[in-house]
Length: 142
Image (cartoon, rainbow, N blue to C red):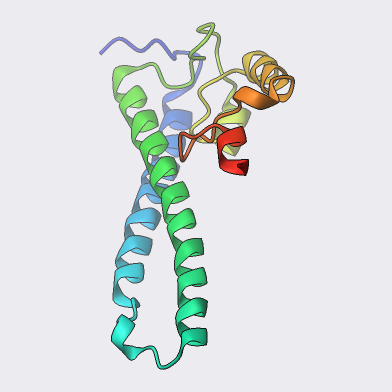
């Protein structure tokens, strides 16, 4: 296997891979816990209880969607490690530093490309997309 990310040492890659696998396991365990504690709608005694559960369920679904999105990024990063491309910017193929990868395991852009992307995003409010839901922000506001 040719390693394109030769600027990362084998030890650094092992540390990052262990952290990615740990995150993957944490998300999997969290899903199992959530399945255990679901209430049956027949157990709800009044409309206030039902409203409270509906609100909590809405929040839970939002967090589950975020976790699922993060899990996809973790799996993508693990695949990149296997291919030898982990730590290379998706835009310019520059190296993403170990410190950045350690802070954000699923980083896909180097600092320069990420700053440029954020600048463009901040200046283009009407076309912003929710990464986890895929809807434009202005559609969600209406």
